Amino acid sequence: MTSVSSIGAAARAVLLAASPPEKAALSRALAERYRAGDLAANWDTALPLRPARPARPELLPPSQMPKRGRAGSERSRIALLHALAHIELNAIDLAWDAAGRFGGAMPAAFTADWISVGDDEARHFLLLSDRLAAFGAAYGDLPAHDGLWEAAMATSNDLAARLAVVPQVLEARGLDVSPATIARLRAAGDDASADVVQTIYQDEIGHVAIGNRWFRRLCESAGKPPPDHFRSLVRQHFKGRVKPPFNDSARAQAGLTIDYYVGLDRH
Image 1 (cartoon, rainbow, N blue to C red):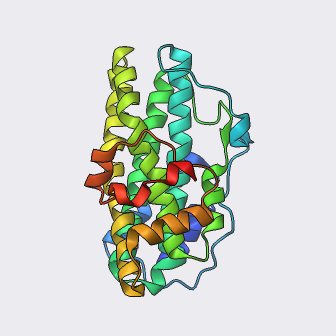
Image 2: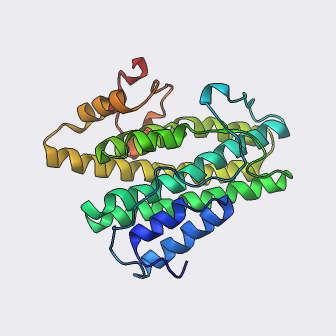
Image 3: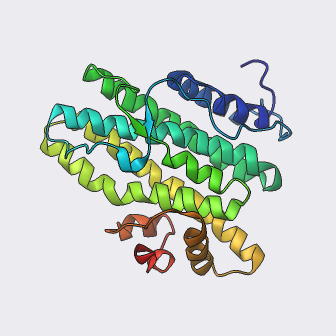
């Protein structure tokens, strides 16, 4: 890691870390170095098209993923925690890819925001890994899907599309489903897991807000109404439907008001 001296090189190093625990630890350490002013504002390092991944878990198409159940049994809670860990692992890469791919053309605050998000996502992954270990399980024990990185590849040349799809569709989905997940975990007596998901939920409101704020700035610079441009980009770049029910209050806290996603559930 001592050879990593710039923001671009840091993003590449995180993306190419194949071991999930090492990726999370590296994300946290490089975020700390960035905050200390120890990474040069240089983006001349080429980023990989895909992040490195371990041999496990097996990656399946989303349509082939087994059903998880509703968190009542220990087995279903392990499956839930594993799925969340997979999302957070991908989110580490998505955050650093945003900083490394788009940061050079944006104000310094953009890079600071996305490196901060990468730090949060790494912390989330480690919290979920600890909960899996408490059940005698580990990330990689179950299959996972590759849909999250497909969204990154589809938006690799368009920052507005990336900000529309990743934080404001994919992460916003977590705002919709987390309250019910937390309630089911508490009903099952698993307060420790519920507390982790609660922490993630609160942080993700802030992540969606970061995406929304930068998306609005891009739209203002281009003279485009943010809700209209958002819906247009989602229809172009997001496969599938933006599914209800929506957590309108949490979305509104993040700036993602109803006029952004009205009608997209019929897309």
